[in-house]
Image 1 (cartoon, helix red, strand yellow):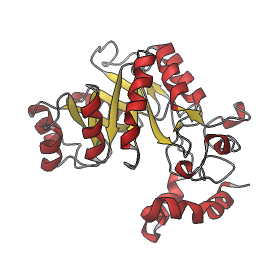
Image 2: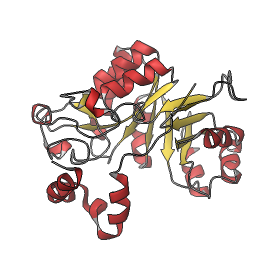
Image 3: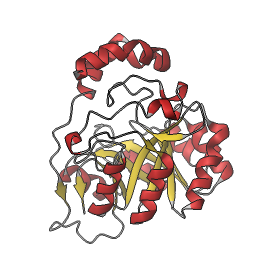
Length: 285
């Protein structure tokens, strides 16, 4: 089935799960979102950033420029490439299994259409990943569990960066914390909903980041109410690129992180503006 056919076939169940995710004003954005980005893999090696110990490069959804996003091979490749951290998105299935996936539905990246939180883990295993860079190298590739992702982080000594999605499973966040402790993996939690990172703060002392598009004063005020916290911003948003609000966040005692750098120039700019934690699709050490 072509990607276009998959999107049409999955629109009904996706809309039921994600609401405004599929409204008309998002149509052009979604069409572009479903295309494979033409990444050029680069490195800080041989540049002025080589050897900067405070530069923390995180593989966005794994090393998605060389393997399908949010899959075990993407995290394996991130580990081999030497990334400081690896980022994932997670949902909890209907039968209580935490899995790694960006969208609330499998439509975009798999050959069957399931709403993740309404499906059992065994049901999700009926779908196969058929979208992503070099997907042909990974036949019969299945959805990755959060536990397998954490184990891969432990294997390569990577920092786990876990995005909490859609605030529907807060009473189960302790399960994630226990998995991290089980495999002795250091971690950060990120979320667009401030209450999600508040909940994590209640049960752990891991770093937490409020995700935003452009940094606003109210975001800084929220984040600074929590210990060991920060703001993670969109590095492509022009409102962030003059560094004014980044400095304001740093002056407030917050960590700053950004998503998602697609070239060396952006990595360098963000680092020069004071951001150490840089999530990237394709720039390695």
